[in-house]
Image (tube, rainbow, N blue to C red):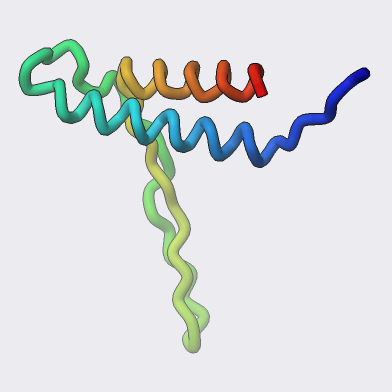
Amino acid sequence: MARTRNPWILIILLVFGGLAGSAVGQALSPTFPFLDPITSAGLAPGVLDLRFMTITFGFSITIGPLTLLGFLLGYLVYRRI
């Protein structure tokens, strides 16, 4: 019998895995410099001014080795559910 998986659970697990990996990497990077972030990517903030409302768009992501490991563990947990 095939089970349908909720994609929101995958997104939540990936976010939590990435956050946990980043936190551990940041805590350990002074001792182990190879755990520093590898790359940073994103969109620079853009502003839309409508006179009565201002909206700012943009995001950035910084990825390190333990962040990738956190994403992988989040995905593996999702597969086991």
